[in-house]
Length: 533
Image (cartoon, rainbow, N blue to C red; front, top):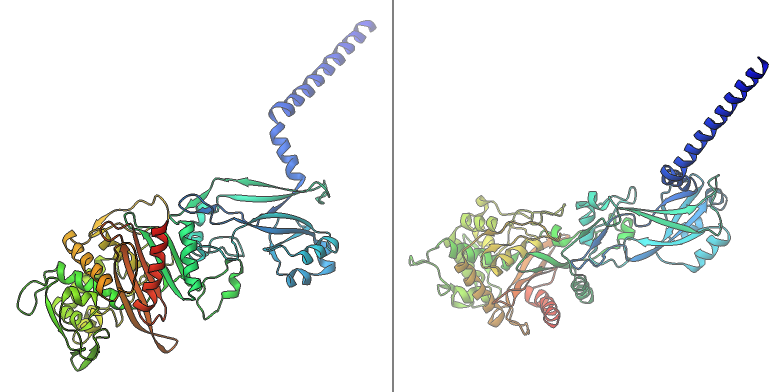
């Protein structure tokens, strides 16, 4: 009986032991096969201190997928919080360091946009800082700064431009910097730092050409002009380049808050100005497209004649013809009046056409409405109220003055409609944007405008240009008030080659005195660069 009990106990013990072995083997198999990746990842996270990268967002590219952001380096310093408390932040602030967030309670992280050997030595020796290089989102002389915009320092979200318009897309990419740490969360010296990117392919491809963008920015800066330039690919309406001055450094946005110089204003889409004589394009289109009759009851043509005496009187108000001299142009055809920008002839044409028809044509060309569907914060300008075109008001409207306001991007679109024989190709900044083409005016009328714009460059107000291509264009000088003083802005808008347009360019120069003197030479520099290319 005793022997049987002993055998039973041994059998149960062996069975229990085998069961324990089986369970341990199963657990080991799970760890080695199924749980390896999960446990490794957990262990890895426990050994790392995660830090937000200097550039954690998706990349913004030009049309050829050349990066416009993240092309420079930041210098990242990781410092024990206790050391900071002992030594203070004075050295960091003196050298222009910028604090960025991280996920550790024991360390603080600062970045420098430029390497500073003195600061580096102090931070390494006195602060025992760990240092690494990381992508910086913007250069200090960032190309296309106004178009790209900038991000908020508080949370890294888009604040303006492409950064704001496509914030959801750009935020999908996340880049983390890691410092290897021990079980207590202390950085392990000598192991170094590493990085990881989630959704690395996320980004936005624009229509910009970085080389052309750099060139127009160089031209504006070298000529020390405040203004705006827009260059469109005529056949698609894609923005190849667009610049606004004065520019700003997106790494130091705080420096411009409250500035009276308007560095943060993108004049291309936010600058609202009277168009001056470039609005004569709209007046001429309205007259030709609506079958306006002259004083003899005949339909207006390019050969219709007007009389310029040097000024035009409207209800006791005299409006000068600034290009006709003291005695005016005398008898002048519509084609020559357009080329020589005769105010008297166009006021007479405006009276015959009527404010209602002129404003309707302006609306058809998109004036008074935003131009871009893929960018926010665009201003829409202002169209004169029809009631304000009565009596002497028609005079101001006919020469692009009064309450009429436009943006450079609107003028570029207006001009591109003429370049495309009356078809609106739309304007876009994002590659592969779907657009609906729309017929605005007849090809017959567009050809007439093309003819008049060529005449402007051959013997009119734009004949100071020397180019190899045949250019179709229109100058403009617009009176306005800035800071309580009267100024004259300069405009030029046109396209080339006139017979088969490839590029449409609009130039605006703030307080440029006249389009001929200030804007035409800028257009010429761009045309020569593009022709050479």
